Length: 185
Image (cartoon, rainbow, N blue to C red; front, top):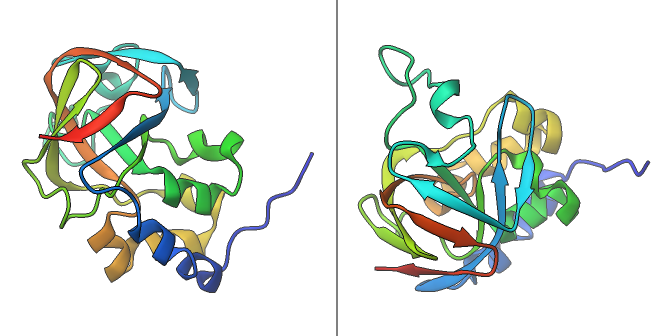
């Protein structure tokens, strides 16, 4: 088994120029991950998005949220999206991308400037809307990628660029597949 050394702040910051060069208006869906239960991950070639369920078969609804008064799933946080350039940097190996815990990994600039809340994204047959709710990560992110990675994604620059990812919800249901174009509408 290969041991992965967590990246240092300096190593992470050295990747910012590459991250900032991600495509602005359209990109590619490079990975779909379904979370059927806590701690479980299924890497999919295709998936189905549903307005009530999010990614069909994902535990988003059952897991709930600590950001809603009653603990139910937050309706604007169905699908989390992470920039593949950030994922590649912190994970260091594509076989570890899914450990970030998001459902979609896209080769696209997902910064607040490029995709402000309310922006709609077409992916495959579906349309998602970007939420105003920030995606900040958790203790599992620190465990998997290190404390410096968490500080990096939650720094002022990290929040501006949405390095930890963005929350979205399904506006139009439909099929999505790895390799689909992701377009700003």
